[in-house]
Image (tube, rainbow, N blue to C red; front, top):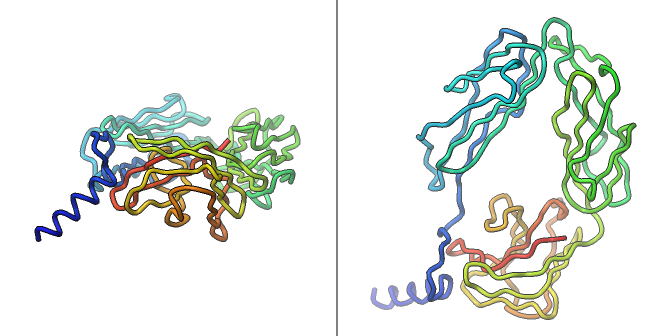
Length: 300
């Protein structure tokens, strides 16, 4: 037992260090989300939303949450999350929980009679390589499910024109690797965002240390491989792994590429088949046994 305790102390020292690190052990599991992305209602109709509220330790949240509607002339929401359609149009219903500092949203469309209630974007694919194009189609739908032409002129907007651009005819051009969305609006309605993932080319990142640890060097990411530069070096520690992630400090929703091959020097990691590397923003050097990131790089 004495030797087992000594080994545990050594491992903890290797991953936590001699200085106090203000970082929680383990991955934060906090979440706040609605059970659906969109509600389609008729004027006068009410629907009870379903909310998932989870704390960092995995237990269900019990604190009071606050609901709000961006436009109460379209839809109102009660303190219990009951949404009531008031008038034709669109709005966003939001909910917040202060103890986990998060917000969830649900898109609400309200119509009356045979008026269009939703505007939807579609395409043959939502993935493209740099330089390729995708033609979007836009349709409007009534409450009874009938497809009708959009009302007036359709206008398209890209969430990030450095990744994808879109012209007035809905033709999308892939500019650089990454993930972005296109939204469309006619004279009455706005569509939900349509995600497009772009691959191809390469992106680079410069490592920086986190939580008192030292990580230096550069990384280059392509569709098939992540490569570290000759001057890459990381502070040693037990169970160091390489991850691609969209979180600056965590691996939730990320992809594990394997254990760190060497604490210094050039090395490479294969991207798993079917994974679009362009959707990830960060590379992390992560102490897996204790859930602590040693360092990260943000891709340009």
